[in-house]
Length: 152
Image 1: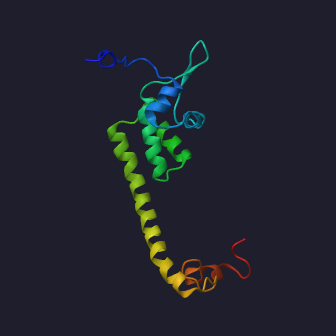
Image 2: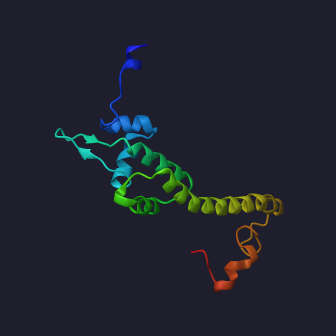
Image 3: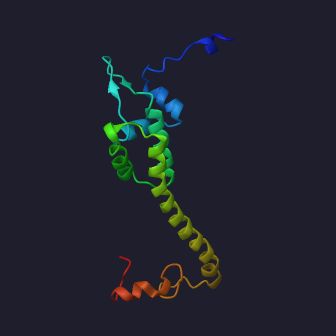
């Protein structure tokens, strides 16, 4: 067994910002951004260096997945703050959180599918008319509101 493999990892030892970045796959600037936004926390050593609890890695994983699902930073902050004692989300927490985000993804998938399917028709007709275009002004919804420029 190599020396590196036989070395025990101290699971209670806090992580530096560089270690968090390396282990999470995020840049150091992203870690600082998440901290500024109140999504993760650190503390300072006597030498004024940031230290993070190891559970920050799970929080960052959740943050990254939520961002890919289109969850805003503000919503994510509120969700993470709603957890008891600000603890890191458990599997049960994740299932509850992601269920709501799943509905949002389904809506986005439907909207994007409709957009994709309508593109061929729109490009095929070449109209690109604000009055007639089924993608830009479906059912002339812009004309219903009021006369004049509606997109300003």
